Length: 280
Ligand code: PAF
Image 1 (cartoon, helix red, strand yellow):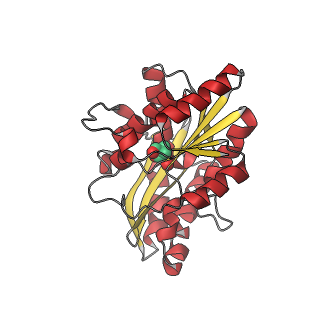
Image 2: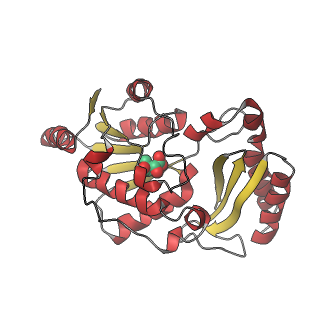
């Protein structure tokens, strides 16, 4: 397993693999890897001859008052996690490698980013799509792996890949949870012990919403109400949004029919957590 810092080095290595006729998978990450990321790397390693993992805390997807500086970083730990999971190459560029002076070109999206996180994090998806588009152009992977935990990100990446004809297959992977239900996230490290306990309200409220749908509830408003009621019972939780949308266009639905995303964002203390499930 090797680590490189420059675009030129990634291109040289991928070109050498291509000359041998090997397939390449890409797992884009912001580092501080956990089992969720490792599940993506394992899947890529199983489906491709070689796997590239990018570790880059992408400054342009953070708003001015967000946690860019505080975002956890530990490249030594990440090297261990990538190698354990079967990755072959870490691309760990400095911001100046990705964003040279006078960087002024972006991938912008509309429909899928109007609601949910897009409504409250105005620059976020432009930053995500731009860096992911750059990574696709740098690595030229056959397949790229994304977690369903960031469901709106996944839908948005699928959309720009289709709209802009990027020759890559997007592979969606299930949410990985702690034994008690909390969705794995690098941001869980911000939680105190009390907040960690309070954060269980996210998966608990979603479970109640899912159970209602399983029992035949089809009204989005009613499911939202069930989830909100449970979230409001937790004093440390502050709701950012609870939404029911179609999983392709990320637009609100009144009835739960077809592939539907039930998504929430909740502050536990100062930490904003997201979670969701997809009903089909
Ligand atoms: O999901 C993430 O960690 C990031 O948004 C991504 C896709 C690596 C882009 O920076």
